[in-house]
Length: 301
Picture: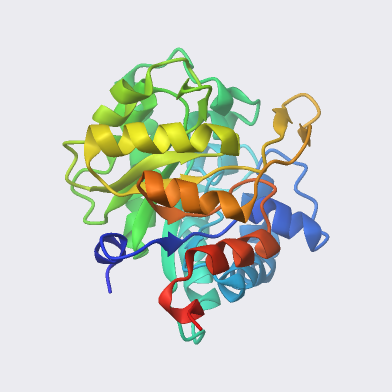
């Protein structure tokens, strides 16, 4: 079944934070490539992390390509040909991890924002001083490579502002792979401070977009954002907040209390969410709880 069709029938369970699962397994993600480094150095670790989420009940795995870019790898001495291979590998690892589990295992190829490549926290601010055309030129080559690898969907995620959303929506045109568009939000606005109704409206007429929503945000900001996304676009809504802590870019660490709870999913679903999971600091145990809460067919008693 296509993911787009499933979303119109029932809630679908997304995975949780890839980076925290890799760190829990003892891997150092301290450099600017973050989890993307392991695509080159320890791909088996990435596959194992994906499988942990699938086994916990996730039906969609988001690839380790969030911070994998031609520019970012070039700074580490990796040429374009090798980078293309690593981007393709990110999809292959997620696909292999979901093989033979007896339930749906869709693959979402992650395309993080321009700020993720900078690794300076600007993905949580946006407004990089680039034009929409500049951002489209940055995103298109990576999206072309990921699309050619055959994922089920492209995850245009943690988008901080409407300029980057416009660029990404242009960049996915004609690739032949559906996409979801997911903003980073805070207090009912994009990270750059734009109203959510204006931000979500950009996706309403994009044929490639099968879901729109929010991710890597405080769980308390989800419910209101879901309602706006559903009202403005009429599309299935995707939500995968982080644990509720705040990112300290200087320390490259999360601070504050965790607020994510699987029981929140019932309210999100009632508001219109159909693709539901977790982002940073949300691990397999929380996804197992989420899967039980949403009770997809393969978890039914």
